[in-house]
Amino acid sequence: MKNTNNIWIQNTDKKLSDNIMAYKDLRNFIEKLEQDGDLIRVKTPVSTHLEMTEIQTRVIRDKGPAIL
Image (cartoon, rainbow, N blue to C red):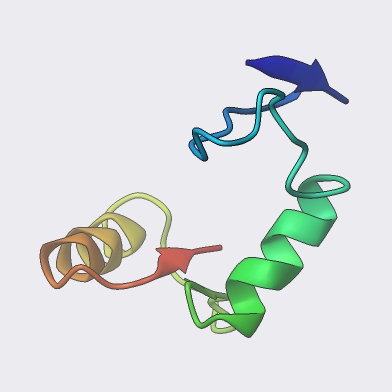
């Protein structure tokens, strides 16, 4: 494993001998997740005490995208 900018990426391609950095930074990673439909942003205010917990529980159960 290689540490580049505090993001750890392990290369799973057995042909390459080095580990590679897949994303420039966290912002780049988040943008890619959104483009691929693997991240959604909650734009409506919700209660972080119970409402967000229930939303996240349902999304995880249904194998949905990450929520930000």
